[in-house]
Length: 208
Image 1: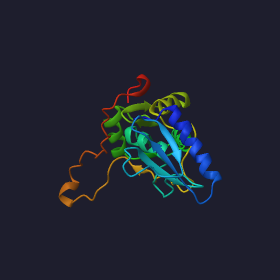
Image 2: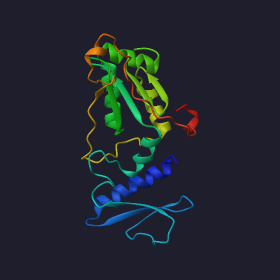
Image 3: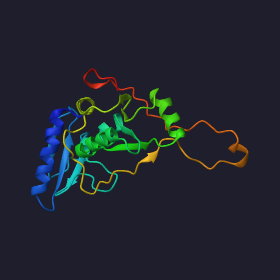
């Protein structure tokens, strides 16, 4: 279930609470009815409530590549991918928006003919920047448009990433592989990473 604004407020309250208490574990408990509560004691083993915990002074996940609770579900349902190219100023603007907002994303670069062909297969054209939020395509960069779609998907308005989080390095869009001599004469079509299918109901009427 996509986090609601109330969930986001409560999650932020948890972060503030854990920053002020030392050597203590706080449990975020979601009851069967969906109500959220916080406690320094875990629920009984027989409870059907869902529980996540965080150590005081940090987020629930501080290891590189791990995400705090409020990002775990939204990144599964609506993963973000940014397609960029060298020397592309709007691409840098799109990247900066995602980084400053604390949105985990995959970056794919388009710098070769194979990359361009793969991009055209995805978006129908070769203009950049190009982005996807779940199944929603964003062509070109508009701060307002991208912000609206990130809001609709449920991404927090401000970064909640732990200080230890590091963005994954950008990778070329067209998958590279060793080519056998017999295959060299006939160039193969570029391989493109498949985008995950999304069958969930889009939020706020947006098509994800």
